[in-house]
Length: 208
Image: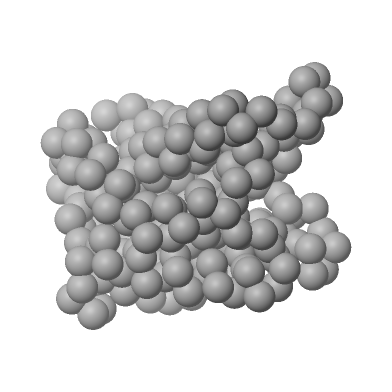
């Protein structure tokens, strides 16, 4: 079962990297954490994937002292794979097909991106093999405040979206949708995966 959970965690991470790629290609706004990291990467003139690793590692220090049970192999997957895989995917697709310009295709990419991001995050959170430092934040906030996971996620997503925007990252319809509705979307899929993956005593709460 351990290998299955790690596999699910890896698959979830790849889904997230693909979602970030779709958002960047669609140019209709990105998810909150990508917006945040794009803002800082532009500020420091760094590759998106490189800055994403740095910001995640800084958050990891906080998570380690607050709830280290949230750290595992899934955390490592997310820190080192999401941003770098997205950079590779974006480069590969744009070099092969050029810039995506058709509005219909961009909308399709956006919808698939939201779906992939929700499924990916839910899958590797419920695999209980560690989560990304950023995804640990609403779990920690929920546990400390008593608020639901959905509401905690919205608060954090909206906050970092504002920061990313103030640093120069572009906003779009995808940013608004994911900032306010990603938490409920993720929770919907978490409840589905929770039933499939809850085969042992969980290392952290499954339903915040």
